[in-house]
Image (cartoon, rainbow, N blue to C red; front, side):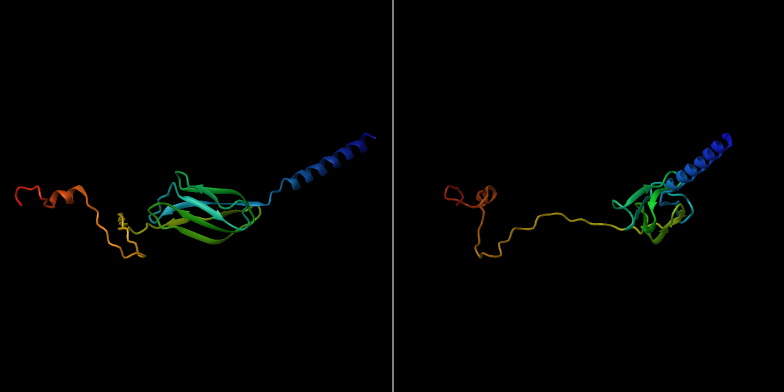
Length: 156
């Protein structure tokens, strides 16, 4: 009798163990890697964003650490686009990155320095022009009235 109880207990134990492992499977993968510049130096502060139709809630982002590394975990399986951005460097986009179940996909990237660009911004107000009317008007301000001779001037 004790032997039957032991066998039943072991059978139940292994059954529950298999069920626990089966329910513990999460259908996700991850993407990790390192961002470097053209000289091989690591780049901290790079914004890494992933987008995909498989992703619920839009894009997911991460920022590289002091050693240039990043990790995006718990990504649903599917095809992703990965974008690397850092001010002063060209944006790098990697497309058709496949994330598989329980697989870590490694994407190391080398970023190139962006060319210098100057931006000139001119601000000012354009004069108000009424295109529907042909009327002409003049505003008499204090400066104009001071320059116009009048009958009270002694010099006239």
